[in-house]
Image (cartoon, rainbow, N blue to C red; front, side):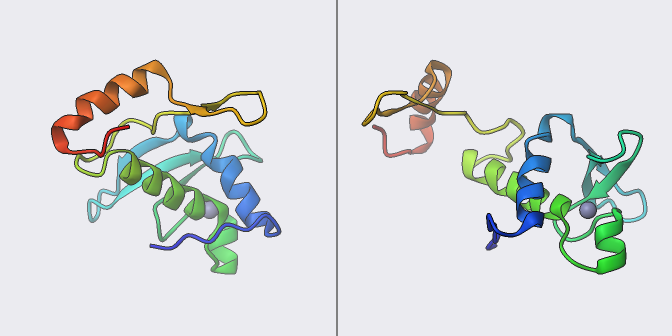
Amino acid sequence: MTIQISTTDPRSVRALAVLSTADRWVRGHRKQDGRSFYAIPSASDASRVYMVDTRECTCPDFLHRGVDCAHILAVRLKVAQLTAAEPKRRATKPAASFTRDASIGGTIKAPEAARRRCLADDVWGTDGE
Ligand SMILES: [Zn+2]
């Protein structure tokens, strides 16, 4: 799947903001057909929660304009993150975060926990470092 994110598209920028709240999303299943979705809190109204998957959303932007809203884009990005993080297993944990040295020409360093995980991952065939 190709996901288009543009810094000149306000909806893209909002999608990144929505994605940054992923730790507050709640996973659920629709009773009528078992389709899974995320319950995502509204950014503008804390009392509202939208039901979102990679194709549909219950927010006004999707319902009235019929476009892929910021929530749908955020869920697609989240799914892509999970898939990229653990391609051989169904991912449930977020991808490891990486920090960059402040100095110019610094290297990208993986946190210790992620490095240990890479070693463990040798079992299922990563390229190593
Ligand atoms: Zn939406």
